[in-house]
Length: 355
Ligand code: PMP
Image 1 (cartoon, rainbow, N blue to C red):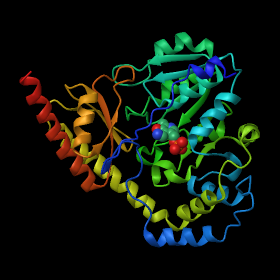
Image 2: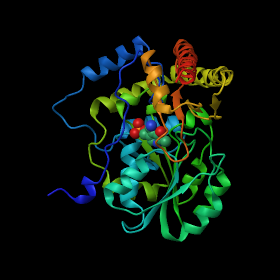
Image 3: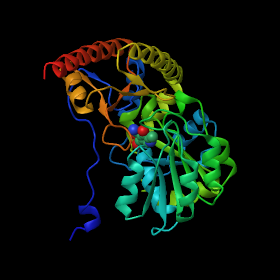
């Protein structure tokens, strides 16, 4: 029989609607250039598909170590950082000890706890979306593991480093999820390399390779080797290993340039959105913007969809009523979004007046 714990779970919510302009999943809006895809295809062709891939992903780890400026021994690979979140929730502390999660944030931390039946301590962020230190210190005795999205998804801000360290120093193993590191430049890498109670998560998903499903945990060697014991042996497919290696070496300049463009576009998009009446845009260090309008988020979401633009409704999360999140796209996609947003707001304003 299926466990009640699993029956009680809600399925993870992903945006399935179709639209020409898709700005709902914080992906990089640029695919790799054709010549590079040709090189990847050429190398994938050589793979013996009847064989298992290298379970320890040695060559890929060498490339990642170089790209992220660490040693291969500091890396544990996951099928996306999502998988590493599961591993950490299994491996850190005991299953009857709670996991601390500042909310609203990325849902996977809670989901991993629920799957394992681990207690959670959810502490709401303060009005500037930073950590509420006083409330956190009140509950800290009950928790053995803490997750911080850094920058936070979906609010886009960077939490105070000092507060994270204060909570950690009460004996809490600290996971700093730096999925959006490339857009913020802020990191706990030094802590992860110097301390056994801190690890950093990174991913290739936000820099143009979401389809490959490659995430990594960076930790001291003695921590990494323990977590690696529970990793499924062939969790990174052969084609993903080969494609990631090529993309991160031969495509490095392309990735760096694309990230710079997105950061520039983020600021332009924010300025343009702020000019629209009634729109409040929150500052972001990531590749997306959270915004609030006077209208119900689901109504605005469907108006945007009618105009062929897909964003994410975030209003189901605590403290985020009337909020949506838009990923930064290519300049022309951002223009299409701005036009759709303006049109939708006008439509909703007039229809509210006439009711
Ligand atoms: N962490 C955060 C904060 C994220 O926003 C995401 C993706 N939305 C992930 C992790 C998951 O990334 P991956 O594709 O590597 O599983």
